[in-house]
Image (tube, rainbow, N blue to C red; front, side):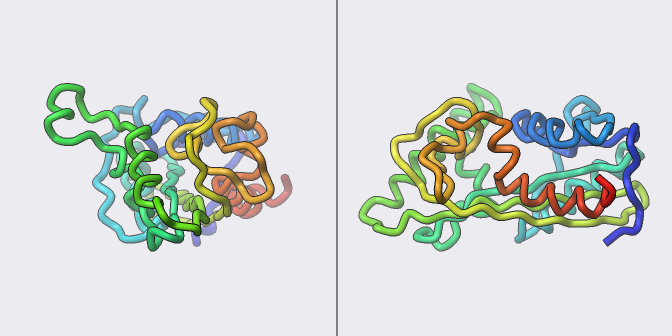
Length: 212
């Protein structure tokens, strides 16, 4: 855990190439007066995620962005862990959405989460247990290599068919415990207040901005 703290007005890299994640992180950082720039806007390469945990991959991405940009960088590595699938897709959540090689040659390297959600539901056929967790690990890295990691979790169930168009990734098939709407049906501000990313951010903000 680094002793360095962010200051209002400071410029920080959102170390992600996922537009949905960048948007959520920017929304969460905005009240604290931080100037944000994304890894895509800086044309930073997307590092290969070679670690075996969310925290490890978050640290890898944040350190790469901080070292390349000379700025503090905040990364997010998050995913869906389904109990009946032994924790899959887990850290490979995004890979389940990658197009087959022949389609990549035609359409490029975009991801298809409709396909990924279909695969999750297909593997859940015949299962009574549809419990799942969204997990988020945030890592703040400084150009000198110091890092701090914050983890958040939210519990829910996998529903089918998917519902809603306000989220991204697996949001349309994830219904948080106690809710009747999926993460893709609720207002983004409401999701920001209670998601796995919100849980991790609460820990990040308590550490970085203890005086609010």
